[in-house]
Image (tube, rainbow, N blue to C red; front, side, top):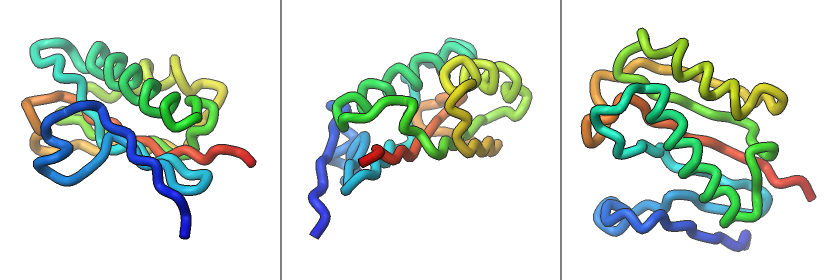
Length: 123
């Protein structure tokens, strides 16, 4: 059986909803949809905070952004695509993971952006 490492952000919602910020299983790291909590802040600033939070979860799993193979961004307004894509490009310009962007009706806590990520740690 593959060993699992559960990585917590300390959010009270983890226990309520039964999830972890990230799960490392074998060489894979799956980071849950992450928001910034930065209500009232623009989408680019939220994306930067989100990627900072994700970077910390990756580090705890023994991974880095360079191990990323896929990211997904959920936006409450597709008009924020350019701003969020530019922030994504700052982090992933040389890594170039598969990337999807989806407009959604709403996100938890009134966030403008939510990002999730999958990584594969090389043997």
